[in-house]
Length: 110
Image (cartoon, rainbow, N blue to C red; front, side, top):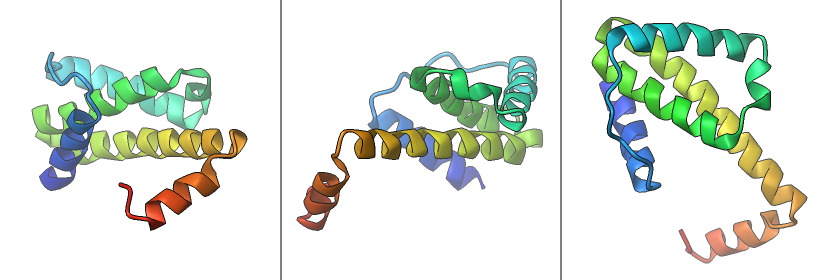
């Protein structure tokens, strides 16, 4: 599972996100608990995409910092990441860019 955490962290780096400021175990556990509650009660939906990205990054870092709860952090990070993908898909559809995206992908533009 550390491979998943590493992949998520590297994906964040590839997208130009900041990967400094390693959180403490106490911070990780408190944030994870609060953010998992937000996932369960759907209150996270009012958060901006920037906040969603930041939470995904922190949770991924936490999976490396606090191995005791590694899978819990990765599960929450994956849920936020899925939401990010859903928002992106909605954006593509709203702006009629889905077909262009598919055409370019088929043409090998990745």
